[in-house]
Image (cartoon, rainbow, N blue to C red; front, side, top):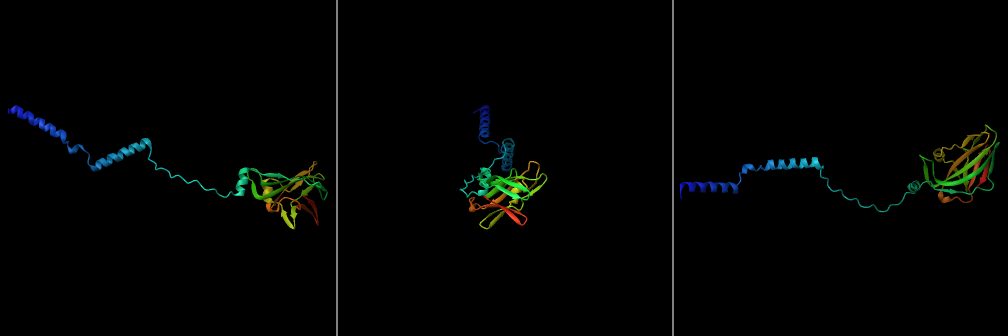
Length: 205
């Protein structure tokens, strides 16, 4: 074999060796590969946001007992109109009171309201008497079977109604709120009592 041919063969073998066995220095060492991976992940988060683990699905809650007050509040005010008795007048000093409306409700007030699972009984009176005179029904109460149910002060406040008023030439209108246990019902035997000094006026409802 000539000198030129031998040299060409050596160059060819060297080239093949380089292609089959790349220089290890061209591959990043272990620490550098990890750093490169972290940098790539950081770049991905900046572009796409962090990877969020799947949220656990909450089990569907079982049926629970409904709170009556929450149910009344959700449904809004529930009212029942009650029959006004045929005898609906009371005399209080120089003032004549006429019961013009009677109803029962679970919720009283707007905005800030009060709710009961019993009943608020609302009695509305039209009062006539001397102009400038006072009518005060703050001592009025309901009675049945020896039990007394005084004014429900929280309901009066929620309704923005005072149990007393000054009469104009057209008289005055006064609303009274009482709380009566639902178990006792709203049937016969309920009376409205308005004390007047040593005496009391009574109206059977």
